[in-house]
Length: 278
Image (cartoon, rainbow, N blue to C red; front, side, top):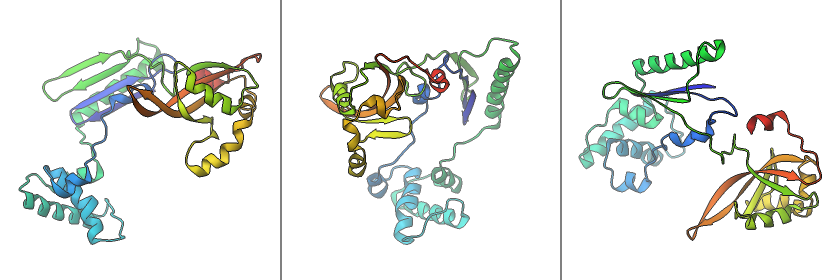
């Protein structure tokens, strides 16, 4: 996959090759977290134009139009939010509320610069040409462009995340075919690489056992006494996803782990989807 994206005067292009380069999930941390404002700040101590706009959008609209859904594509709705945001800004002496900013905040619009789009599009097209024709070595593997001050282009080679839930091989665990799902969950608490408590287990699209909510726990409770090998369709090597709680520095956090289960005495059969993922 050849991927590209822009935000204002900044952009990136990269080449993702399954099994070789990091996948999309491996580098998801590169994306900045979505900005969210605490409701208490919006209601009590707004400090920016965006706070005033979100107050009108998230709080004032419901107070005035109880039960009426806000439509960001309706010009009348957007104009109302803008007008209320201006009033809010004037009350707290805040500058900068404009109609275009109101649209950007409410719709989460990222500014697009034509020159940045052209540069990143050209980079993606060039990499696609390389892959299709083999005329040159492809990008290895992440290019960043910054045109805020002057012109800066840099290539960074990221490595695959061995713990990636998508392309990582998963933690290898060998089991007897007689091990029940309950015994497997108990083993996760003592596994040195996992130390997972209160684990929920999923195989492909099926919930083998869920700790919560109560209705799912009751529905999957009967699986606990069954052999895990049978629950997984008697496949000798396959992936399960486990959600549980782990402790670190006396703090308990929820985490998701990818496990590759191998059953003793069975010939390992790996389907093509799993081979590509690994």
